[in-house]
Length: 95
Image (cartoon, rainbow, N blue to C red; front, side, top):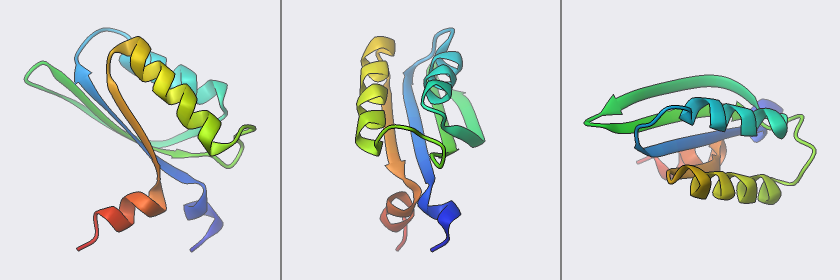
């Protein structure tokens, strides 16, 4: 596995659509110096769904601290937000 893959994370966001979701998540990532490498989003029957690929190479806190901040943001937005290392995400989705 390359250093790039070691530093990649997958962030998924789901919940009732409302204004400001992308901005709030992006601002949180900026605060923790997580670079957004790819982003996909859609609205499915009034539900917002977004998947982001991020890079934590420059992050100054532990992954656990970052996940706690994302959990807090999830509560603030009343959304489900999950963060996983890409390596684990890939293994979970391999048959």
